[in-house]
Image (cartoon, rainbow, N blue to C red; front, side, top):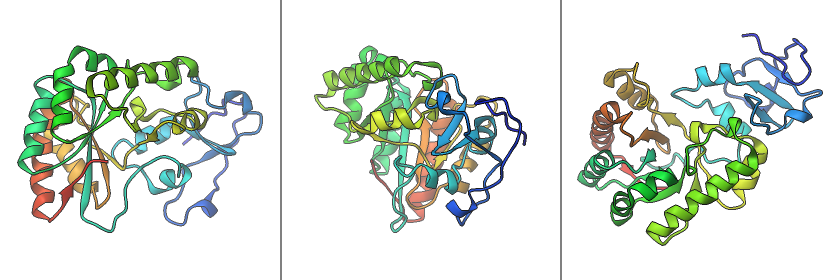
Length: 269
């Protein structure tokens, strides 16, 4: 796949980094000669690691469901999954709280004595505080997902950090607790942003994303995404939003039943 060099307009490619991982081959990548001006800039649609840029159009297409191990290895400071030595899944829910939808999720989790982590949008927390209190009362973990679901690559760093702090304050005002976990909306984050946020939060990514937000996908496909790729220690992304509910709720029901039958537990981060 062709990659563009946003740094200096060159078209040359490099296949390498095999020394960095012994498991999966890497896509074509770009050396960053002349690229310092693009470091952690929101207009640069790239994932960076040290001296390499990765073409994000390629990565986003490849990683829609399962995050490759080599990407996780390149970003060891982010939490992608938990240890694999026990049959435990870590279910996470983004974009809530959403009255009705989040309530339905809580009911399903309670039926299996399952705990989960909810990455909440600050604006929705202020709109629906009672729903968030139900999440807290049920013993689930609450994380920060910015106040307005901001895309870091389209938002200046100072604005993004202020928006995250605003969400933190909104959640704390309702729960009386400061969230320890943060997940960037769309999974879009750069190394500079990760360092800034890492001073205050554990930045959580994922191992498997269900794809429940995608209206083009059937319930069957979304369900198979989870059943096929989730393993012991996986952090799985669902969305407790109105947009995703029609696919998320039936997928969650099958996921809980399937893995419970296999002897799994469901724990919060």
